[in-house]
Length: 88
Image 1 (tube, one colour):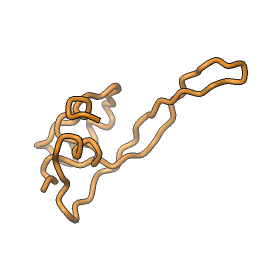
Image 2 (cartoon, one colour; image 1 turned 90 degrees about the vertical axis):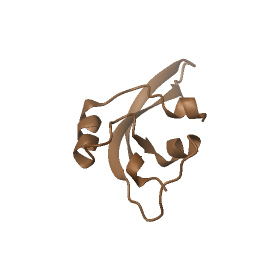
Image 3 (cartoon, rainbow, N blue to C red; image 1 turned 30 degrees about the vertical axis):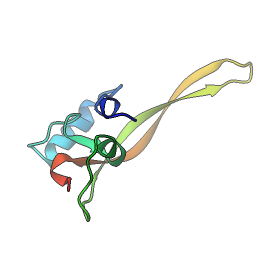
């Protein structure tokens, strides 16, 4: 994942945005909150001992059906995100 890709999101969730705003009012959702992997792609490191905030997201995957068609399916997943204040 490149730095540019790490800053782009395909889907936005208002519920997750409100949750993250409640945790840290100074940080903007989808601008200051990223997963560990996205921070790492941007060249940043999470400070030792920091605990992230868990949010639910929808992940999309392609499934091949019995008759050979490709079907897209979305399923929920919990991920941990970190605020810019938690960087080393």
